[in-house]
Length: 191
Image: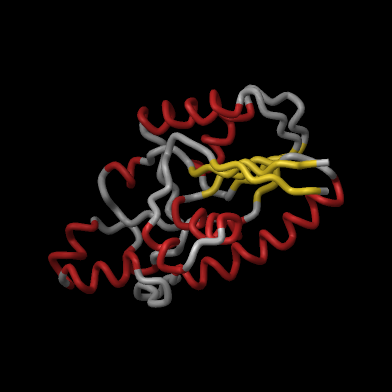
């Protein structure tokens, strides 16, 4: 028997649109973000989802809400912040442009896209990967034990380690991917 994991990121948020470091800040979906969430919902309409995961942030919850409109069979929604966005620390809420002007493009690139260098008071992707991998370990046990399909409403940076794990990416490949706002990734497990 096969079970499925459906992974997607939230739709565009107001901070995504204005090119700000969002991190743990609650940033609402834009009208475009709502349309993107509806597109993911349409793509997943024919699938069966019994359990869903979200982070505590409204953009994750609101995207999942759109998806679950088509899934009355989903009887469990779990909030787990191991799938939350990367903590940008002191950069949170600041415009990318402002950080580039203040610290230079090279420092911005390191903080924004380095695997193991965290922004000041924040998390590196390596740190995010550690918590996401702990989540994946528990998720796989849960899916196998309960024989359920799950949906995961994640974030752009928390999706990177998911995809590295399930798609066997190198660190370099993981750091180069851009996760779409309007599509999902499906993974099957033998249970």
